[in-house]
Length: 115
Length: 113
Image (cartoon, rainbow over all chains, first blue to last red; front, side, top):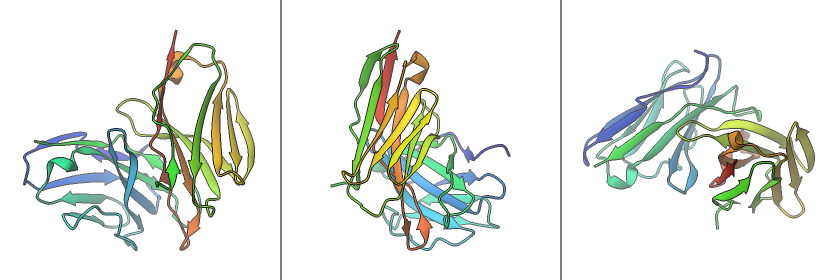
């Protein structure tokens, strides 16, 4: 595709349910990043992938959060047993590689609301 | 203290004004400095990119980096209502061989006609 695609664009879920957020990066981009943007809090880094590998998962807020990437392409961020504090916009970005400083292209985000 | 500090605003200016947006940071290892612009309900998009200290100009936009003071700025000349957006500074270094952008909170800019 022409850009980074995220789905769904909006998700309303009940507290305690699991949710899956999907990111389809730009073709050929080996690096993929997940950020969370809460009101007035800026972009909080969650996790990155180089290829299918996520070397550092320490940015994930709790063990309810997990992420995977398959085939060096699509990534899924899963939040189990959602809580109200998980409500935020989840942004995905991709770039050519994490090993060089290149432009990160962002998707439009998934707006998650936990009620 | 966050690694990157940025005043969230909002900053409201009249059309045609010169706008100054700023960030401070604490990590002296940062080498690459970026400004992203984010319109409402959209993802951020790269506006300016600078390596190390110095100035860079692109049309109405000028980015400045002062590594000695750990301070970066973005100037917008002849501001337009279409410049109304949130501006996020971002920085990175080759920590562990990987460049992961660290973002500020973003400053909300409103340019009114």
